[in-house]
Each structure stands twice: as structure tokens, then as C-alpha cells.
Length: 387
Image 1 (cartoon, rainbow, N blue to C red):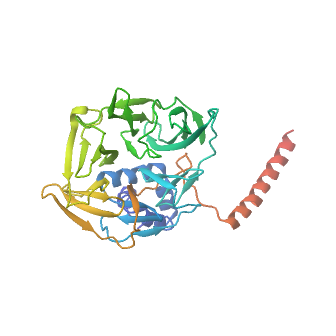
Image 2: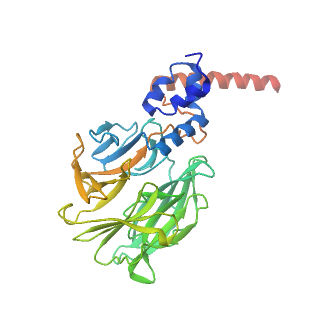
Image 3: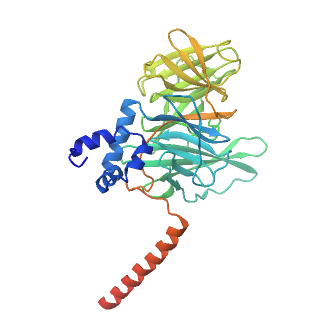
């Protein structure tokens, strides 16, 4: 092994899953330094994303589970290393990181088990009289500044009429580790259902009512880098009256799912921001799915011939795009009701500086306090000598 060229070792390691890499850190000091380095972390992530390997479904609901997307055979229990309630939602994944929408929210790498509990976020806006509030979160990645950001929208409505009264928008950056106020979200949040789950092309997306047409909707995008909102057009001819419309992402493409009593249609934006690139991916109806099923597209198969669908948060199916057939997937250990997000394994760290932050055990904390005290005493003595 010592005679292997460094480039060859790096090329082999970048193709391995996170669990193996965590174990191989103990092989040699040079391996540990390599695996922990910021350059290798990005190299490993890029390899996984380009090759489509090391992908899992992160399953939420009554607990947290992972399902390997190559096998799709068994749900493995994940025990969060922090306090977690089953009612706490889990966001979309960005480079292997998810946002757990608890109180307070938590950023979590489910594969490396690193996490960051976000600091408290107070509401500066004076609460309107006779109003109630709801909070929505979004999570995205700023690739230009290599920063992970969380957006929180606090919205207030009248207790009786439910009319929108006011809102406040704040943003958190992992590098800065604090919340700050930004331009408020310009629309009420009727379609948000609590959170943004759609992150594509460096922007978070949600649906809002079209102020010029009560039967239509707009896609509102929030650019994570510029921190500005801008509207995007829906696929042509879609009306929201009498149907349920949701926004999703599949293979890094924005998608719109239209669900009526009799059929489900899924549209995909092939070229981001270009309205003419909206293409109808599929239309599916009973008996292939159950009536009134809500369908969420998750991923394509490796050959692109099939689409993995979550049907009504109760079952997973493969839909064959050419044959127009459905194959139900039996996953051992899957909860009865669940939601699913596609997540790529990564070594991405959560201390905002590209270094690996290790979990500190209680005994280690005590030792660290003693060590810190000794260092402080030493520094104090040193400053006394200087003075």
C-alpha cells in the first residue's frame, strides 16, 4: 500500500460509500488527512452526483429510515443524534444535507451523522392584533459562496377571516451561523404546506396564487445567492380550480404534478427558466394508481426508462415510460405512511469551514474543559509576563 501512487489511492477512495470512508480514516494518518480534506470531500460528492451512485431515499414519518436506491429492498432505521419527534418534517436534500424542521431547526448529514442545531430566530415584526402565525422553512445551497442557507418565513393571518396580514423573512447562513432579516416574501403562502421542498439550480421554489387570475398559479423562485425572489411561469394551460397542483424535482429538473380525481399528469422543465421547455413526462390514471392518489416523482432508473413514484405516501412504484405499466416495490420495514426524499451520500461538514467536526462525548467534554482551563491559565500567565 505505501507504494501506491497518491493519485491512485485518491481515485479509489472517491468511489467508495461514506460508511467505508469513515472506517478507512483509521488505516493511516495520510488517509485520514486525505478523506477529511475539503478538496476530497468535494471530489467525492462530484463523483457520486455524476455517476448517480451512493443514492438513498431518506424516509420520514414515524421515525427516520434510509433505503438504498440500487436495491430498494429494505428500510434501515436511522437514529438521529439529537432530539427528534415524528411530527418534525425533513426537507429536500442538498449535497447530502437535510433540514429537520424541528424547534429549533437542525441541519443534518444523515450519513456522516454530523449535525448543526440552528440558533434561535426571534420575530422582529410586531404581531398584528387578533392574528395567528405559521412558519415556513426553505433550504438551499449557494454554490458561488459555498454556503448552505435556511430561509424562514413567519406569516400572520386574521383569526376569523384568515386574510393575510403581514409576514417576515429571515435567512440563516451556515458560514456566518446567524439569522438576519431580508426582503419579505411578496405573496401569501397558500400552497406552501409549511415548507419549501424544491431546490433546483441554486434556487428554492414554491407555488403561489396568480394575483391576476384566481384559477392560475405562479412558481415563485428564491435565488439562494442573490437572496431575491422572481416569478416563473407554469406549464401552459394548467388551471388550479378542481385539481391539486404540487411542485417537485426529478433529476435536477423542476416538475409540476397535477392531480385530479381521474388522472395524474407530471410536467418537467427540461431547461431551467425556459417556459417552452416544459414537457409532459407522463399521465397515469386508475387502475394503475388508486383514485385521488397524490403522486410524487422521486428519480429515474439508471437507464432512464422508468420513473420511481411515491403514491399517496403509502407505496413506491416504478412507472415504465414506454410500456406505460406500473411495478409495485415491496420494501421491508417501510412504515405504513411515509414521505421520501432522494439523498446522495456525502462527507460535507456542518461547521461552515470545511473541517470535520467530531461529536464530543460527555467524558471528552469534561477532559476538554480541563484542557481548556489549562490553556487559559497558561495564556493568562503569558500575558502577565508580557505586561
